[in-house]
Image (cartoon, rainbow, N blue to C red; front, side, top):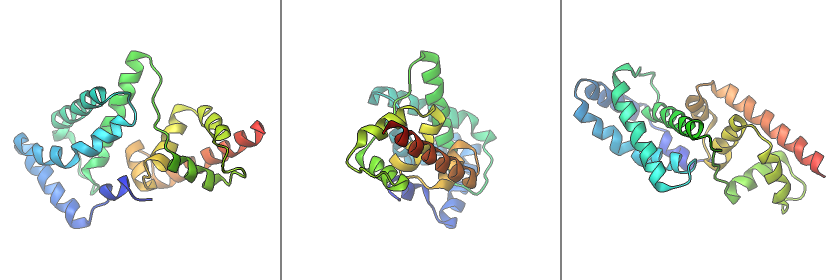
Length: 190
C-alpha cells in the first residue's frame, strides 16, 4: 500500500531539513510558504475526499493553513513529518464543519479499496459488493474513518496513528476489530 503514503514517508535527512524550515518559519512567518507549497496538494485532496465540492475543500484547506500558521509557534517537532500535524488540523476542521452544519460526513468509496477490504476479510462472494456496502453503512463515523484511511487512502498504520493521535499498534488493533465487525455483519446479512 503506497500511493498517498509514499508522499508521507521521508528520509531522516528530509525530516531534519523540514525541521529546520519550521524553525526558520517560526521566527519569520514569510518562510511558511515553503511548507505551504510542499503540503497544499496533499491536504487539499485529503479534504476533498471528505467533502462534497472543490470549493468547500479549498475553503477548508485554506483554514488548515491559516490555523497552522497561527499556531506554528506551538508546534513541537517530534521528528515526524509536518504533514501529520497538518492532517490532524484538517481532520478537525472537517469535523467542525460537519458538526456546525449538522450534515453527514462524505466517504469516498473506490473499487480498489473495496477489493482490498474484501480480500482482507475473506468475503466468499467477491462479486457481491452490496453486502459490504450495507455493512460499511452500519459502521460508526470513527470506524469508517479508520477504514477510509487504511483501505481507500492506502495509508500505513503509523501514519494513521499520527493523524488520529493514537499509537501505530492501536491503529492496527482498531482496524482489525472493525474488519471483524464487518465480517460478522456480512454473515448476518446472508
